[in-house]
Image (tube, rainbow, N blue to C red; front, side, top):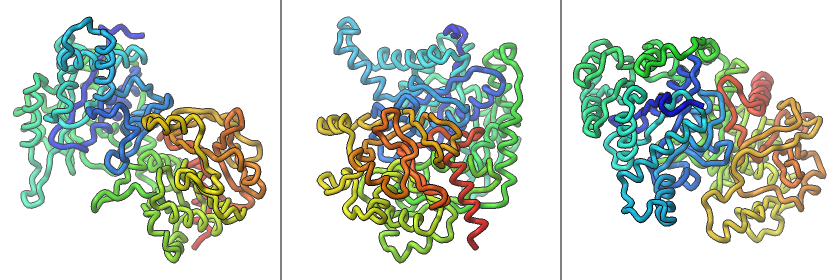
Length: 552
């Protein structure tokens, strides 16, 4: 484990506007440093007062990413795991809610010895403690810490103050990077640096000077803009990194390295002599594969978390999208993803529109909205032999559809929708029921990694290639054990079960009955990585490619 005095920190702060790509920048910096042999630790700081991301509406905040430990976090944590290719611990996620909750509980327990507890120093020092704790737990040489929001936000001021104090205490071990945006107004037709200059001045007012500026824009920065930013923002022109819009986020580390960002960071933190040079070959090959794809496979994602005004919010299913891409790239095709609102298919005359797709996914979700349309889509996919992949709620609905339309259990339902239904084939776990009765909704689900045993001779066992797997969960409801025997009376197979055989983790139809009709109670997308795609997604894409060849 590294001693704190040897540990390095990079704080990444956003400027000009939100959504400039701080999370991808942090992920890319982490990947570059990892490729140079460093033990890297990525930390996300979220300024909101929610203790975790579990109760947030996905149409407003995007996907909730579940760590192996079960902590519900911001979607950027998923990017961190995907870029680094490893699991990240819960100590690497910090929210204002966590910080304030800890300080208040400590004060209630006389942990401050009767002192007046204030934002400065007590909240600030708790932030510092958590950043240092994350480094200690991981034994990392360097931490890259993303401070959420944009400079000037009231909410993240204390986090920037904590970073400033850490820099003041040990300036050789702490550096700052600002990710900013350079607009090109349509009527003006010229890239403007003034918003970035103002953002840097605002950061200066906090007592912080960025060492590196990552400049996002539609096109690469020219030399003149770099020089202008350098002069007005007190940095070297070579420390202004161009980050133009690109088709794939996985190209970002490669672009950063063209501007020598990795070497700049190593030099500023005096790490040149402490790294062993490794290559970037695997990652570069991935980028080349992504660029050269010519054949496509059409995948429909049927869900409800799409609408936000006049725009489509694909972030609600970010991990699903990325998992599809990883498997498609491995198989040499480009996924053509279509967003379909499940409500539209409550009109069954519209179901024929599904024929053009090579695969259909119904992802996780909650509530009654759009359920009739999802059930209709699942029935259509089953009857027309279209590869179908159900994730969490998508598996539960798959079982309900099969029970109703094949087994004749016409009133089969989930207690989430019909608590007093005649045939509750999807029920609530007793331990979760107790929490909900007490209105304890936060962390009231089965969360985190759990093992599953796979049955011999099943598609799931063939795709995984092993008997025991461990996958991440985020749900309250399960297949009702009282109905297992009836549900298994025909072709439906529960190919994955919990060690005590109480919980059904995977359901499928045999390959001789359907090319791919499989659902998981867990979320396999959380463990899909660019360089190691998830086997279930790969199996799904393979089945979709076969349909593409046979269906004209």
